[in-house]
Image: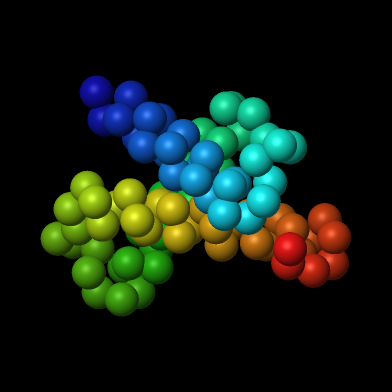
Length: 85
């Protein structure tokens, strides 16, 4: 059940991050989910560095997934184009 929730939340976070980074037209639902799940890993790492990963609620996890996905898409933009859009 946790995997299904992770896929749903990851898809939403990836979709929102692609809209923030203006990449929505070039990404499908599969890549939105992938970006959201990887963004969640990045966000959890950042929360761990801040010392608040242990007591994180689902809302904090979603926000960190969104921020992590935006960071990931920013890195992808820098690699693909040499700059952040």
